[in-house]
Amino acid sequence: MANVLEVCMVVCFGLSWPLNITKLWKARTAKGTSVLFYFFIVIGYLFGIASKVAKAYAGVSTPFYVWFFYVLNTLMVATGIVIYYRNALLDKKAQAATL
Image (cartoon, rainbow, N blue to C red; front, side, top):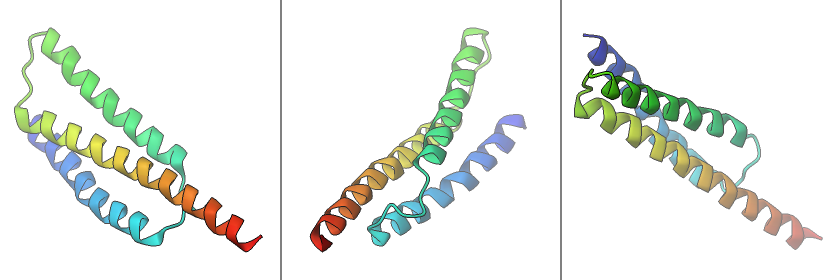
């Protein structure tokens, strides 16, 4: 039951990341976006994955779907970080063009 509840939590977070990625991509600006926030989220997901690894070494198995959603969410947040840096570059180019 604990795994099911955990997956529900991770799926709910996972549903928000595609929306966020789309918004970031369309915005074409890094203004108002905190890359530090994204890094903390990635670190949190990596700690979640590390806890599953630690449980595996202790003999506690974790269903595949739990691993899948942790990895998927981590990749989506990493995509948001990449888009942030793309948008920051676009901001610099726009600023240079106005000078």
